[in-house]
Length: 162
Image 1 (tube, rainbow, N blue to C red):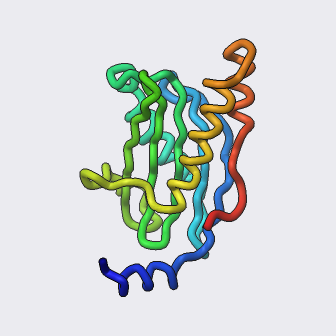
Image 2: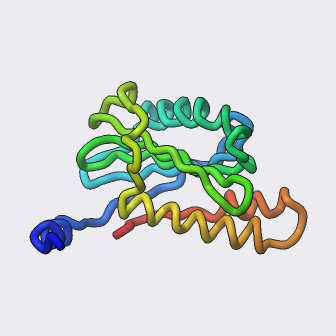
């Protein structure tokens, strides 16, 4: 166990801000979009537009991965770089996740993350909220699917994440 590294992480841990950017139609998917911001960073309209282009290209192949047509897009202005996560619900209660990474403030340089790259603690908090929203409104909800989708779309996370 690397106790020194763990202590360093604990000492540097801080709050990040999440804000919903609405639900949009992207490549045949209903996509809930979030901005996630490290201190002194802001997700810009340019960042969001680049993330939506990346999501569109990724989601175009959703049918080959068993996509159900619902996804979450996280545009993360991180402390050490910029990240885009495209998370979609697929058949069999499973999900598909793609992570893209690039240098700070250069959305045109976002590329698929290395094999095995997973969400950071802040991204995982957004995805945990979204897992609960999917279960609550889509899987366990009642009424017709359009009503369930409206409830899912409205159930967003906002504010500080630790």
